[in-house]
Image 1 (cartoon, rainbow, N blue to C red):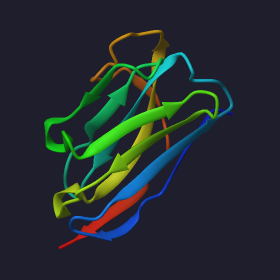
Image 2: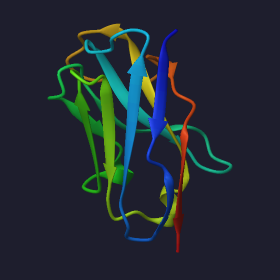
Image 3: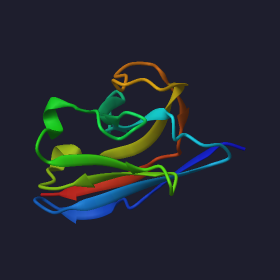
Length: 126
């Protein structure tokens, strides 16, 4: 059974930091792009950051540029999202996702992600 399990969410004050992790099991995603999405209260799900299979090509949404860093460790089947300078508007459920295709050099930014975790809540207080 393929699983993506997020961890690391929680409650933090404005300006604080959190590190999210996503552990995968059931199959390897070492050749798949991975991404973090989020869905805030009353909002649609949006792409936060993505990373290619090799970990050398990344994408960041404008609203997290310079604050968040996505990384991956294929040997450990994990990806991470380091979130700094958090703002109340970053409050959301954060989801880990995997691309259904392999070996894309540029990580996709659309509907190509077909494997999803259950999400982890991030709440930033003002």
